[in-house]
Image (tube, rainbow, N blue to C red):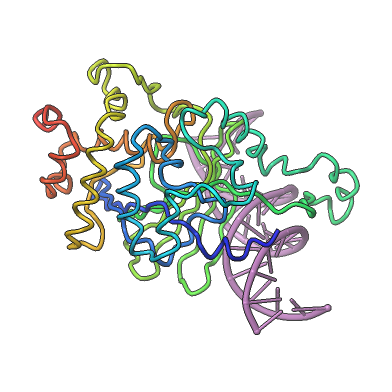
Length: 317
DNA sequence: CGCTTTTGACCTGCGC
DNA sequence: GCGCAGGTCAAAAGCG
C-alpha cells in the first residue's frame, strides 16, 4: 500500500508547453522536472496516455528523450509497465484496449463522485453534514496524468470539452491558485488542474487526469479512417499516421537542446477521447488544426512544422 | 430555471 | 500523533 517510492518516481509523460497569442496556443514539451504529473500508476507512459501502441518504437524513443531531463528512474517509465502495483495496471491503457480500458477505467472512473461510496456511504453519510465518505481502506486511485504547459493569458484554455470548476486552492510557494475542473459529461470523470507557473506567470500548467469516454462535445467525431478533407476537423483522423514522424521530431529537438523543450505549436483542443485515441493522442491530433490556422507562432518553427504537418496542410494556408 | 463559479470546510496522504 | 498541503465537496451566489 505504500505508495511512497512509486510516487517519487513519477513519470512524466510529457508536458507540452503552449503559448498562445490570441487564439493560438503554442505548445512544447518541456522538461518536466518539478512537476508531479503522473503518479504511481504511471508506469504507463506517455504512450499509454496517448493511447498509442502501434507507434511503439519511435514513441518510446521520443518519450525517453523527453523524459531525460526528468532524470533517471522516470526516464524508464515509458517502457516499463511491469513492476507496478496491481492497481497500476488498472488504468486505461492503449487505445486498443480502449474498449477494455474504458470498461475498466469506467470502473476506476467510477468516479470520484461515486467514490467508493456504496458501502460506506450509509454509515458515514451521517457524520458531518453527510460529507461524502471517502474510502478509507483503499488508496485512492488516480488516473494517469498528462500535463502540459501553455503560454497563455487565460487560465482555462478551451480544449473542446466542457468543464466545470469544482474547486480552487492556493498552492504552496506560488502566488497563483490552482483550479480544479471536471468534465461535465456524466459518465466521464476526466479532471484537470490548471495553475500558473510560479516561475513564469505567463505559463499555464494544465494537468489532465483520466481519459474522456466520449467525443468532444464541440467537435465532430474523429474519423479515423477518413480523409483529412471531409470536414474541417477531420484532420484529426489523419493524425494517427504522422505520429511517428512527429515523435522523431521531438527527439531531434531534444537533442538540439536549444529551447529546453521542443517548440511545437499545439492546441489542447479535443484532448482525449477514449474512443479511439486518448488524451494526448487526440490532443495531438487536434493540434493540427492549429497548424493550419494562420498564425505566426506556428510558423516560427518552420522546420518543425514541416515535419509535423503534412505539406499540403501547410500550403493550405 | 438550469448550469457554472465561488469559496469555506472537510478529507486524505505524507512528512516530521 | 500532529500539522501541512493537496484535493474534493457542496451550499450559496452569479449568470444567461
